[in-house]
Amino acid sequence: RQVQVFFESAMGPLTVHVRPRVADDTGFQLQVFWAEVKAGTHWRFRFGKHFIPLSREDWTSPQDILTTEYSPHNFAYAFGTSYGAFARYDSTRHRAWFSLHTNAPDGTNNEFPSVTNDLSGAVRWEFVPVGDFAGFSDLVGRRGRPLSVLLGASLGAVGELGEVQEGNEAAVQGNVDLSDDSNGVHAMIAGSLTWVDPFGGVPFYVWGGVGQIGTFVHEHVQLYTQYSLLSPGTVPEDFAWWHSTNAGINYFIFKWTNRHRIGLEGGAVFAPTNDTF
Image (cartoon, rainbow, N blue to C red; front, side, top):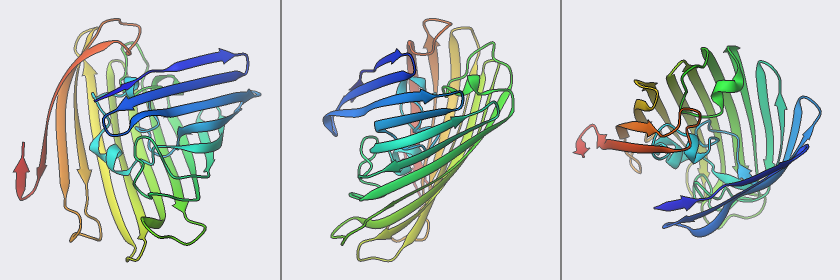
């Protein structure tokens, strides 16, 4: 159970965003709070606590995702939020983020890939070969939008500068994703590969992915389904194959926004030799 409240104010080139969160697992926390300055036509600079620009899903606000919650793939491997700064570059066909942080990831996931770290950084690049970026502000899709395709790729790393006593000494993660947004249809496929160097252990790899599609069958009604895969990677003795599939229906109260909806969703978690419903 969780509650998130969004506050945002824009004054000329300056935008301020604050997002408190209350949840069973973390209690009260300021999950996001940052100030962003727009410099010219192409650049923006942000300072504060914000999501690390790696996963396209994690990068999307919770009221703008397709399902009722983030995917298991996102919960397992997303870096979450952290204190730091980033620069963003925008053009007609390309977008890029350059991010640097000075503390452990905190927010969506505050234990993986590192309990504590001294330095983390990330680079994300997006390219739209068809259409434009207007349809990719969410993971829902809306009627009336022209066909657009987005290709994204990112690379991030966390590491310790001093002596490590627990957790992981370093981790590196790469992400790729492909999204489609057209008239009433949204689809996305994304995957990640993570290398982890644990304290007192042997470095290992883990990987996973998520695929989802949603389509409007009525101006107010959307059907969707999603599948997530988590692999044990090179440490099958410690991890297991993990699969999750879910499907649902969304009813949007207004046609002009996706932020007011009623959803019903069901799912199953299963593995090849041990089905659990």
